[in-house]
Length: 91
Image 1 (cartoon, rainbow, N blue to C red):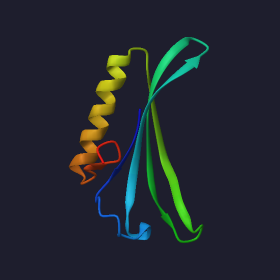
Image 2 (spheres, helix red, strand yellow):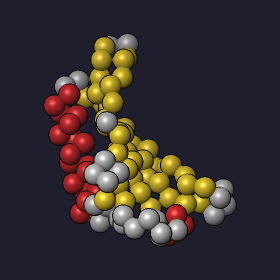
Image 3 (tube, one colour):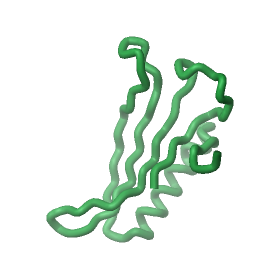
């Protein structure tokens, strides 16, 4: 599952004036077996690079899918409380 969260769903707002977060729930095969990963990236415009930049990567690994889903929901809720309420999964 992959989701981009934004503070606005307005299509005409320039990218320079926006920031986003990407949340990902994925599985990873490791030496010790299958793990579930919750990843969060911060995304914003870089004038220096002339493009959107993904930074502040945060990863958490879980053995149990239900725990990873719970953590994903917690991260999503925390971002919602910061104003990131619009999701590309709901558009």
